[in-house]
Each structure stands twice: as structure tokens, then as C-alpha cells.
Length: 230
Image (cartoon, rainbow, N blue to C red; front, side, top):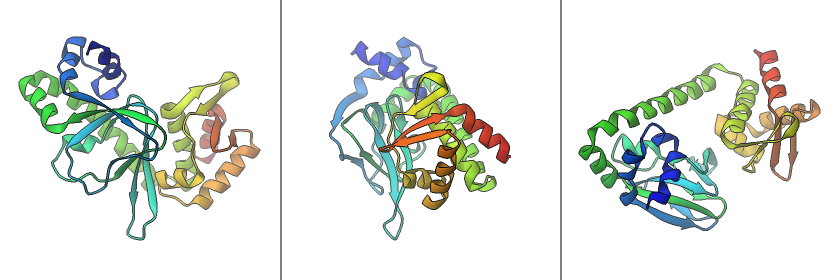
């Protein structure tokens, strides 16, 4: 079981816990393989578990009343989701689906809560991390309200480089998830046409290379574009 300690250490939510504290969670973790296109949970299902992604990619998305898909996040190794599971009992606010062969650890909410009840000092450390997540969410909401569509696209590319990027030589970063322009638009609440125009501009400026859905991003040029807009 101690082999799962590195999994937890790679998970932002558990980053402040010692090895001894992490050991408390190992008995309640269950590994699950997810073939491509497997639904992990559906919007409206009763919240019963949280998940830690360890391999592959998980798409978090909603469908609006007209049936249009809105992509919210892409989860990868080290991501714990959904955070809403720790705040209230209710329903999952979105769908989760593997978009390639993936693996997650499943933790039942009731078991997680019992660990915290038995070890109250853990709650303080974990709530600090949740506080960081709330600040991040507030920043993204401010972007939606105060930034132009072009600024939001550039900020999204910067954020994806940080969360989904692999360093390449000469300043280029490869995004390790394939994105459609419609996916990028959905994540920041703008139109695909707006993303198309900005990506076309960035390609002309040699700031972005797109081939078969794979993105290479020259991060410094993206930051320069952002400074020029603001």
C-alpha cells in the first residue's frame, strides 16, 4: 500500500501532509481502470466519491438545455476532483468522462470524512489547500467578468502551459492534451470564432503551432501579446 504514497504526494490537495498522515488515506483508496470514453459520473448523480487521476485524461463537462457541450476542465495525473464533494451532499454539477485510457483512485466521501473526524488536525491542512482553490476560482471569475475575449484566450493558454504543458527546447511548451478550438472557447465562455481568430493571429506571430490538435506554445510571446493588449 505504501506504493500509493507517491500518488498522494503528486496530488496538490495532499501536498502539505507528511508520509505518516498520508498513510491514513491508503486503506480507503481503490484503483479503477477507465477505458477511453468511459463515464466516471454524470451530472445529477448523487455525490458519493471523489477521484484522483493517475493516468490518462478526464474531461469535465456540462450540457446546456439545448444539448450543447461546455467543457469545464481536463483532469490529468495528480488532479483531485470534484472539490465540491467536500463541501456539501448533493449532486455532481457536471459529467466526467475518460477521453483516453485512464486510471483513477476512488475515495468514498463517507470514508474520507471518517478519516478527518478521527484526525482533526488534518482538516486544517486540507482546508488551507481548498482555500487556494477558491482563490484560483475567484481569479477565473474575475477574468470572465473583466477581461476581453482575447485576453481570456491568452490567459487560458498561459494556464494550460502551467497545468498541461511539457517543456520543449527553445522556449516552446507542448500541451499534452489535444484541444479543439471549441474546447478552448467553452472553457472561457467565448465563441469558437473568437478563438479561431486569435489562434490564427498567434500562428502568424509564431507564438503558437497547431498540428492535428496538438499545440506548441511559445509562452514568452503569449505573455508579450497579453501585455500589448492590457
